[in-house]
Length: 90
Image 1 (cartoon, rainbow, N blue to C red):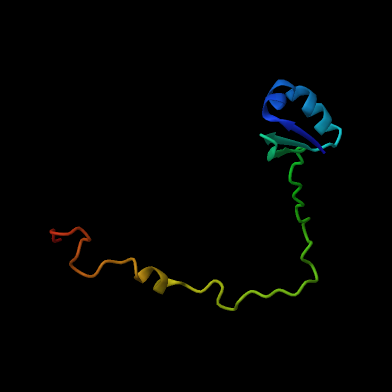
Image 2: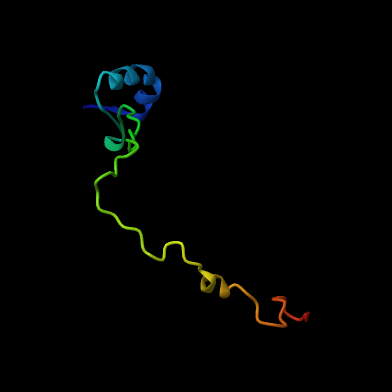
């Protein structure tokens, strides 16, 4: 691990990036105290599930999965005769 001060990091950024590409870590310090670590970029590798990958696994869908959910929306309806705007009437 290489430790460099901020001025040196700004002056020799290209050289530091080359050493990072070779697998080294670089610590940037201010007045001898570590402030940041430069490491190689590694993109997050997301693995997509292949079609049919759930075959044979136990999972169940609720019997009422497709049942109407009218009561869910009843709280959004206004009481009869109210507009929802204070000081006005229908």
